[in-house]
Each structure stands twice: as structure tokens, then as C-alpha cells.
Image (cartoon, rainbow, N blue to C red):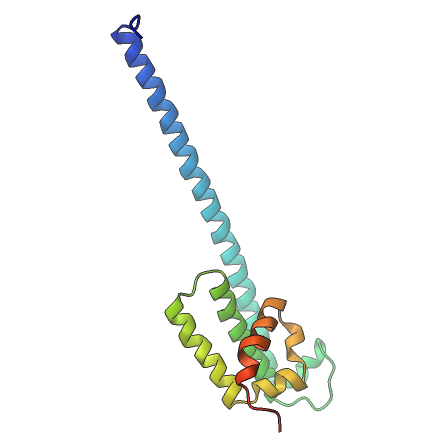
Amino acid sequence: MAGLDLGDLLTLVQTIAIIVALLTTLYFSRRQVQAFAVDLETRALNDIDDKFQRLTELFAERPQLVDVIAKGEGRGAEEPVAYYILSFCAHIFRLRSRGILGDNEWTGWRAWMQNAFRLGSIGRLWKAEQIGRWFDPAFRSFVERELLPVAPAAS
């Protein structure tokens, strides 16, 4: 180090500064690409959810159209509406699973879902009509573990 003059020292400091700047740029660029990927996935999921919501609204308005994807006899308006509500619950569950929904909001929505199973006919329809087969395994597990136990026994 004794043989370095002021010019060499400045060149060394400048080189180190450039390397640090490049590493910093690389780090933040990588984070930005990851954030972009999450944003893209979120937009795609929201687009699918919007289309799915319209489909379930159509089924709720005209229950006979459910036969297009699942043949059944005597399907009333109750089943498509229950499916619509369960789709809404599944969306809330996915938001929680992805870390988008905070603890406070989740506690409120979870209580809302438990009340729907306890006070309404969704729990009975979940079991009798096997609506759960249309939902992803994680949501089915959540319903079986957290929502059905609060539902009254089927009469």
C-alpha cells in the first residue's frame, strides 16, 4: 500500500464505488422483477376471479344453466347461490393465504363465514350436494376443519 500514489488510490476507490453501485442496482432490479411477477400473477388471478364471478352470477340468476357443467335433477336456486357465496369465501381464503388480508380483516371474515355455516344452509349443501368438490384442496380442508364444525347437525 506504501507504493500507491494519490491517483492510484482514487482509481481504486472509484472502482470499488462502481462495483457497489452495480451490486446495488442488481439487487433492486431483482426485487423489481419479483414484484412485477407478483403483480402480473395478481392481475391474472383477478381477471379469472372476475370472469368466475360473472359465471356464478349467471348460475344464480338461471339455475338451470348449471347443467352445462354438472347435470342434476331439480336443482333449485339455493344451490347456485350457495356456490356463489362459497366462491366468495374461497376468494377471501386465498387473499389470506397469499398474505394480502391482515389479521384484523381475516378475523372478521372468518367469523362471517362461521356464522354463515352455523345460521344458514351452506353447511348442509356442502355435505349433501358435495359442492366442495369444485373448490381447491386447501379451501376444502379449511371448510372441513374450521367451518363445518360450527354448522348445526343436518336435520
